[in-house]
Length: 171
Length: 390
Image (cartoon, rainbow over all chains, first blue to last red; front, side):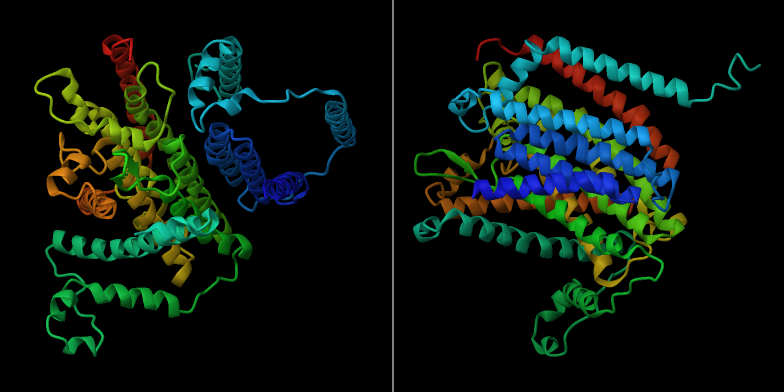
């Protein structure tokens, strides 16, 4: 049963991800991205990572893709035709894809996964505390650094996109 | 008595329970539309729908009361939506045009699975919540699923391929995303209180109700457990309330469909059954949203502060009957939800609609800073006042 579900979710996720790239209409692409994210959330649920699944749906499917759609609609109400890929893009992306494939293959061939996963000992659902403890101890610095990077990116976008005419310099 | 039911395999029981809850929720949402018409009529001092009745039923004495309450108007409206011709305008993007109302129903009906609506005592004396899926991430899951509702509005507006729906859906997506932030921030103090030091960490709505169902212990610090959230988290409750109005697109926040300047907003091009699906989805969101508010801030299935359900059932002598006690809890909870929905309607027919710039200003410049300040103050106060050891 769970194997069947995994196969279905995996095919669904990858198929929708392919739809994101292959669709001509950018609104349809964004919707494929949405479905693909929901599929990944389903895979997380199969791993008993409920919090991750819910957060993925809440943040990415619920807000980020909605913002994508919002921007697409603002820029071009019809969804628009997609630009043709450039040669360099095709080469670079196929290289990246090959690298990823190599990585997955080598992981499957060589990696040793721990036989028993420690989380299995916990009662179902009592995982929020372990997430929180890891976030505020081991991974505190990386989380802060990523947050700072995002803040910098946001400031950069504001500076780049906002026109500062009519302020003190312009007069 | 119900052993035969619990002997069914899980894959039969779960769909059955789900269908049962939807069968209750769907007519409830439809009934809300009639309640809305009657309440707006009373507020505006007119009788409202009071004529419709089937000819055969009119001969039965006593039916006049139901007739004047507009109960048969509800059936007539429902029938009309089913039998009406379902037009699809020629200029729309058909696939997405048809998908949008379906997408509206999915999150609206899914969130119910995550909301507890009653409780009973099992033979060991523990309080068991009545709900479809008791997940630990509780409220977060409700938020996550209901946040998907924005896509139906976006798609409806975009697929309609005309100006008013498009403007309506652009407004709607901006509004829904803006108020989601304040809403999420406003409930954090609740969970700061629920999660005592040393606990395993929970976001479950059941635990929030458990926190609000204590008895009266005199004027001791212990007694605040019997109080409801709205008394010690008034700012949170207020922010959640305002954000709830915005998230359910209710007046004064019904920007997406403001009929004065946008005809009907995102559903301008819709008619017949597809339109009624949007309508029912909005009421489902309202019912679930009211339910979550009642659980977070109004004590869930507890009748009065300091009178938890278990105690009330003991007083009434039904504590040993899981069925009766469950019914009692559900009735109390639904009563609160109904009162809250009345409040929704009362506000709708009293307060005029905001302008769009006002909506954005309230969301980002007033509500969000207030929510953040509220969170910081409560976090500091809880860190200072809460005892360290459990």
